[in-house]
Length: 104
Image (cartoon, rainbow, N blue to C red; front, side, top):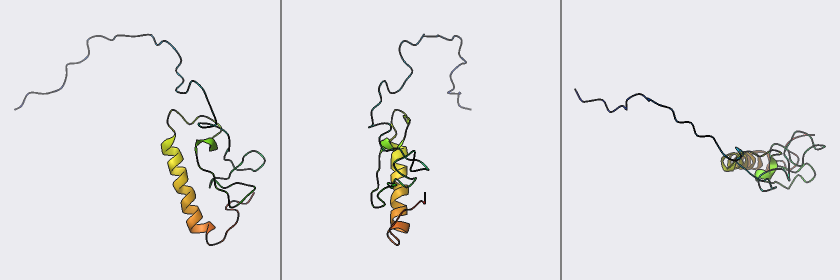
């Protein structure tokens, strides 16, 4: 039988005190947060859940600026998923019947 390649159990724990901030984003800009906030109500947001402007139904906005809070160090996955969601709604719903995709 072959010898095990597992490491022996830990015999000590070294603790290093963290210096500095735990924040992954030391500053916030509208590139990462805010700007064109997405929400369920045109009184408190700029775009609906399909990234469609509440005021101009033919204007769609994509990007991390849709989130009022910082989505993290790298929101690319979330932003890309939301863009695909919006494009699917544009193709499947908006192109057939242009207008608001969400009724306020």
